[in-house]
Length: 242
Ligand code: UDP
Image 1 (cartoon, helix red, strand yellow):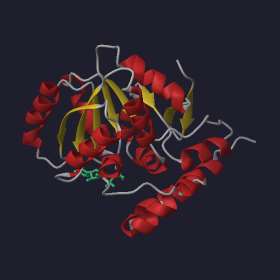
Image 2 (cartoon, rainbow, N blue to C red):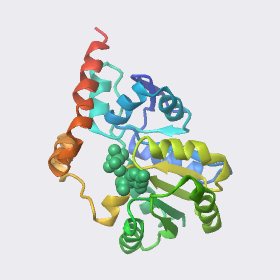
Image 3 (tube, rainbow, N blue to C red):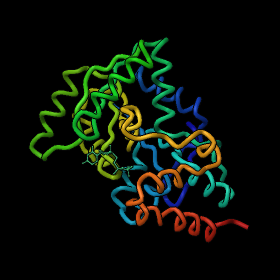
């Protein structure tokens, strides 16, 4: 069992990307659905205001640090996490590993047409991957039984859920026991990235931990929400162990 590091009440697995991938591969051999969440600093701050979200995050079988902010906080608090394990990079690793072990995916989330475009791009970039279904992420309460039926009938092993936080975490937690998949992974806006409707920050910015700046430039309407990032760092400084 990997060590867990407490980042403001959210217990993050202290794993490298390769260790996270190994854990996913072992989940694929299991029988019951396993939850994976990928919190960044904004989600951890949301969890501090929403105890239900915090409990849901902490109930997952794997919780990986998505973003440079979480790694920085762990360093400030002297409980250093090994490395950033972002949701999108983890999904790419799983897709690459499907070359050795065929794995089927269901893509759930994004605006109409986005999951479909993401599926097409994934199939062209990872020819051995199998996409057994997709569905947009906009629905009413009474559509949910039909969505669960569609996912189960697809026989997908990995369900990628991109409904934004905390919707995706709550949805996965609530319906996990009705789903026949092996891995349920909350991936935020990654479906848009696979579809090409959103772009990842350039490599040099990701390496410098500046994804947040790129995102702010691309989506200025996120500014208010992004105030959580300095708050998150300040909270980490307050909890610093001397
Ligand atoms: N989304 C969705 N259903 C919803 C709300 C959002 O499928 O009811 C999708 C949205 O289209 C986008 C993704 O969730 O692809 C992430 O949304 P957002 O950027 O708001 O969330 P965050 O990045 O904060 O997790």
